[in-house]
Image (cartoon, rainbow, N blue to C red; front, side, top):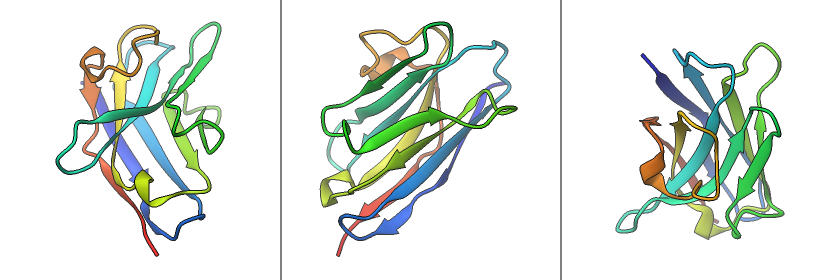
Length: 129
């Protein structure tokens, strides 16, 4: 059974940095498509970034995340884990962040939440002065 667990998060002032992590267990393949979605109350979940760990490793970022966020695979030995390093945070980055798993290669539809099969419980990130 695939399980997805997020960690990290918390509160930070504007301009600060934060790292959130995701660990996936029970996933049977050596490659994985992992992504982060953010949700704010009253709004739909929106994609932030995605990572394909298979051949031709690929990275995807929402325009709001480009240049500020970095999605990366965790260290060796944790192939199905990743982190999202968030720098120069702004209040608009506030929300519940969900780690999600797709059992297929990441593609141009990476930002559609319907293509992901497994979701974590979410972790709160708050950017406020």
